[in-house]
Amino acid sequence: MGQDRQGRAPPVDGHARMSEWRGIDELHLSPLRPGRSVPKVPARLLEAIRRHGPIAPVVVRRVREHHYEILGNAETWLAAQRLGQERVPVEVLPDVEDEDVAAIVEATTPGLAENPLEEARHLAERLDDLGGRSRWGATRRLAATTGLSRSYISHAVRLLRLPDDVQELVRSGRLGVGHAKLLVGLRDPGAQRAAARRIVAEGLSVRATETLVRDARNGDLAPAAAGPEEADPDILRLERTLSDTLGCMVRIRAADGTLTRDYGGDLDVLDGVLRRIGITDF
Image (cartoon, rainbow, N blue to C red; front, side):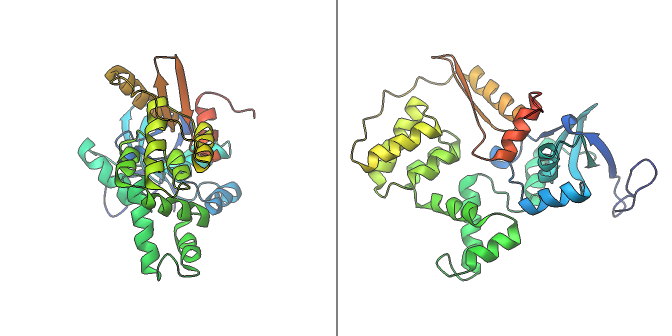
């Protein structure tokens, strides 16, 4: 992409778009993005940016001075954080209304779905187009075209094996994807439901869920604790704000005074969280 001396790219298709460089901390993921998910950063993109710098601009809209909301190519922003870079090129879209954000984010992010289950269905359909999930090489070919790892695709599609009511817990955000992937290891739908209820009721961590699933396989699944009280709307609002600011899921349990941050086992996301809270020397 050609640039002038100020680092701007020429207008694209006559639209009033600009390409410029902005600080990492001036950008944030859109709170209106479908499913509020955090994109994965393909290893190939990470290596390309390591060697050549950002190749394509991050698509944003200006919220206020020094504050931009990411609409597309969040992967470049995440990769730049991972590599300790301070700035990324951005393409500023003018006059983007709130009601248009979700559609733009979905259209500009390859493979992004409305939630993990929609992503799973999307990947399952792509596998079917390649000859079926059981056909040798289908997952490998899909991984090559999407930039996702074969293990990521396989684990994502396995979520569709969960009972509908457990899938609904994932869809609503009450059950984390990391928890749900562990539940797939329980073959009995009844055991999956019982474990899911306990995870939600007790706010179990992924590590605690690993123990729970292991016990369930041995036939030693204790009943769920009494259901939690109705969530405080102010707490829910604070959870959403913190999740958007840090780029990972945040849960607050007022009853025992704990706050947990779930980065979904993705080290790129964890690196981004650490940098957002000012930890860069690790």
